[in-house]
Image (cartoon, rainbow, N blue to C red):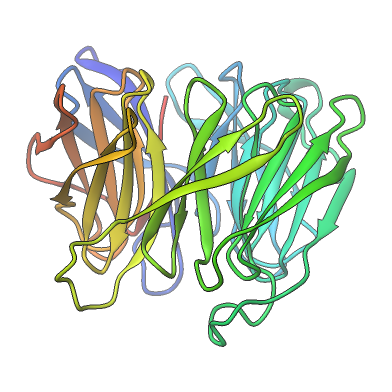
Length: 346
């Protein structure tokens, strides 16, 4: 890394004909959180979501295409990436992936086909053929967005005993018991959200027994209780992500929780803002301008003192200092990066 760099930020992007992006880029953050974006470090098509292995040696990306694929990259000492191999996701338009805490399995959500899939990870980060897949079914009241299942996220519980999948199309969160020896999932609970919510992403609190889910279609956030023993999810209070007087069109996108567990952040595309909540009592802190257009993804620095917003529509990334009250203050002008849609601080 450059001498003044404190950590790396990998940038996933859409790479279609209307974008100048051609793969995964690498940025370096200094002590204040200011980003310096460098060149593409991996040529790959539509790497719209990224995840890192627990040991930091392998980075995984989706190829969000009709015949979806997942790709494994070796992380070199200088931060550049070398492709190891790829595998089909047995679904269409994979939009999210995560790595099981054991480091032995990659979990992927296929948006258009509405299914989730598990790939074993071999020695050296090599992706093996998929060992298990589950097809969701159902629909919601929104005829344009919920005509069928649309798996939008799949994440392991903090201890890895369960896997949770948020499905925008069926207004449900599916909780699977996960076999860490075989990679197989067994459905334990199908948790219904209010019709038309469009569950998009969820994030666990560091205490492991609660979390937060954003509804893309209603621009809301719901706190839920989680039982680490039985995998039970109990939705609790739901709060709006937008000001009461906002009359335009906006879609909720990402949700993250600070490493110290004090704050919850969620992004709005359309209103182009970031809503902040105190985890203590689940109370609003404020709604802050995102400084970018279309903040599809937000991410926190490793220490949680800087928040980054990826502006898909403005080709920029904005860095914010996170105050002790949770308030967001822009650190500097946005950094340029074409069509950024996923940020992975390392």
